[in-house]
Image (cartoon, rainbow, N blue to C red):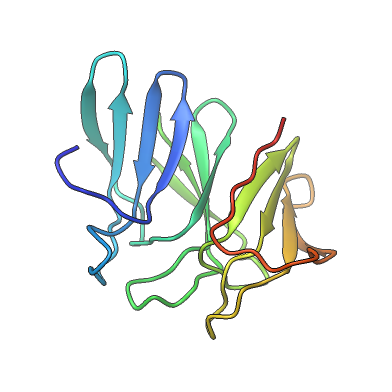
Length: 160
């Protein structure tokens, strides 16, 4: 990569790694909107069309064969976001999805069938969240789910 990244999003598409947003380093307060696609087999990195807004500390999940969903994160002032964005790596186009109920940075997301589940993170007061919400594409809306037993921040989710 031509530029270091911190607190960015990553998704894998076969032999390609998509790298989204983030910050230059721990001390930087400026978020990036850039999107990079690294081809593992060719050892090449190319820049794709930028995100419509700079963001760091967001959750990212692969959606289908050629899209990624960017969930929450923080703006350049470190304030959590409830924005949700669908980014297509082939067309390099972005599409805003409905906002989440809660603003959260450092959250985690997972896809189960046609549903995106978002958990934890921190709110604007810096409080770790136990809340969980899901976006169902068939209803095109967010819905609150039962809370987790403990608050989570910067967690990892795996769906098998």
